[in-house]
Image 1: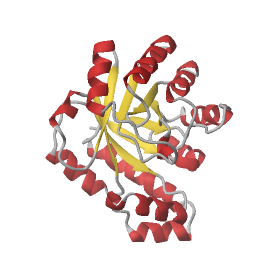
Image 2: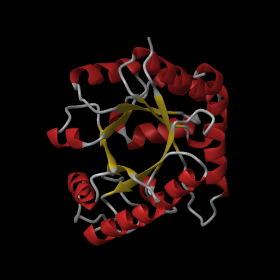
Image 3: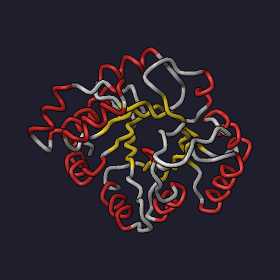
Length: 251
């Protein structure tokens, strides 16, 4: 029997002050998504505030999870974000370290651990998450309310990690759509330990829908395993194709 399984879809936040594309992603993916994760200046470039976009998700009837990284903010800035989120009614967060910035410098005032502690002090009612690599899990991350595990292209590797690192909180497995061969090569170069199979890259190079098909198959396999509370799905630019492929399969 398959237990409740949640699909948390990642939204591509805008780099310009225009939310039309965000609203289109939310409207399209809301047919299959149980919630939406909004990145925070992901890949080191400035985007519209994840808190503001999470508020937009909530206004459209969805469940928003605002990602906040320790890279871009000091303690005062973090407290400002928590106040802003409270004013907007945003109460779910994923705290991460943050990729190397393309401009400016990384701050050293906060860590993910200190962000969790500070947020708990701000309000015990917040739901707080952390990212988990497919390796030993630090003890302090077990205090999070949920975990998002690292994107992987291997169901077997994800299941092995889950079995070896049991936790009592919901864990969402990372699944990413490969949009093109170029996307795959860039990803493999940027994250050497992501273990991206060459065979999959070749399939994507030959067929633009192969990345969508592979991600959807992975989502269904993870659901059927019963090992995870759900999936953190990164559809990148292929969210329309993903929604079309998964809408009937997840029904």
